[in-house]
Length: 580
Image 1 (spheres, rainbow, N blue to C red):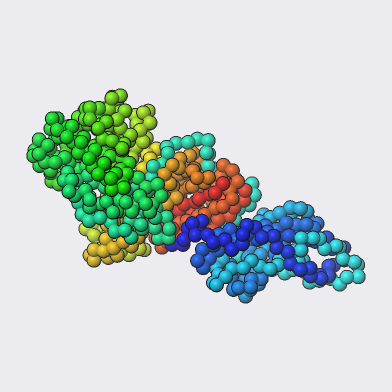
Image 2: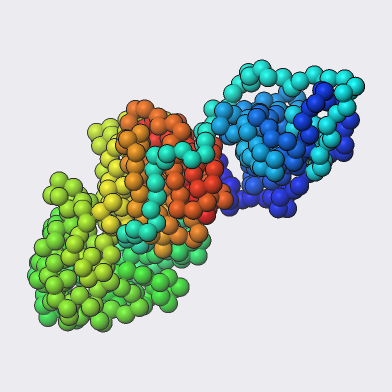
């Protein structure tokens, strides 16, 4: 995966470098037009071994119908990709020619193009440029006298290796138009759970999951369990502290699976059983004690659920509630849980019967901050959709758990193969599709099950499944297309699509001076030269793609004012980040 260039930019050229070469005597043909130019060459970003550059040509002479710009590198730099130009390189010499839509430059007019390149050792800017054979001195070469001998005209032969980067002619009808005037939910984040009953993530594993650097996944929510035994609370402290300190804006949600056995009607931690009503206050104090314990360890618990899956009673830690019982508990006891916001209640399939009673009762409603639910069966029941009652009372909806891994039946080494097609198909068509649909449903968070597991975001090292402990997996890279770039506090905004973009599943977000689009292409065909219309001019465009054979790989873009052009690969998920 290429480093996110904005994070690790080491700009060699401070600002824009206006470069002018020494005057070169050039003999012009009889009655030749006056010629002159200046070139603005900017290293827009630089990372280890690579860089991006923008070039703006200003024509100071008579109008041009076509142009060829040449320069040479002095330190062995190599151009790898280009857009809005046809660019070739021979040794140190680079030649950039206009494409069909930007050959004309009026007197005083400008045109721009961009490219990516590689470097070793150093990356100095070129010492000079020539436009159509005339050195760009910042002045104008006068019309030659009739006696002047004609010079050889610039070669008009086409490039032997035309650029395959997206092209973006001016005033193109857009395929995706972003409308920032129409706004939807605020995003709280994307996350995963630590082990509820097992060991904690290591420091390095936590950093991989929440960090924003190279080969890190950018999770902004971590889910943990509230054990009924207080002596077990310390297990996750270090991982949660690391997540809070190393990540950016990371939230912690704590979910209890059961109260202590003695407080329940079945006198057991397992197989459901209800919380006895005369222990309601003890349970509230139990939750509060957990929150305060973690707070004293330096870990803020942002959200505390009243119950994980109140409608599921398996032979492991569990506890049974009805929607009315949850409402009564939250109304009478919810205020006792301090320094956190309560969530009701993580039903298996976001069953509204477990949340509507609390939302409909002002006493209970005032004591909660969030509505939670799990994805199991939610789509089939028609509830992978906006929750109108929650929106009515401004309670964000979080999807707090889903676990789906049927790509190989009982499991095999395919999970350790990053290019395995079966795993990729399940990731794209099931996992990432439901993330997209949850965003379209105005949900504010999507939290996967364990972050560290052979079928999850980083491997757990189990030899039977072929993963390396702590190493990012394909599913993690795909999920990071949301998690790394759609950050807490961003807000989803509207967009429209053309027929060309119809196969694409797209959501857009605005925040931190940026517009971010996550593009899911589950079709078997690429959508090339897709034009995205931003709400205003774009100063920088970054495009990253994950597919069967790529992991958050940087892709070229074409930028023209408020329009950006990209090639959307078949069977891929990608993220376009526009700095306005």
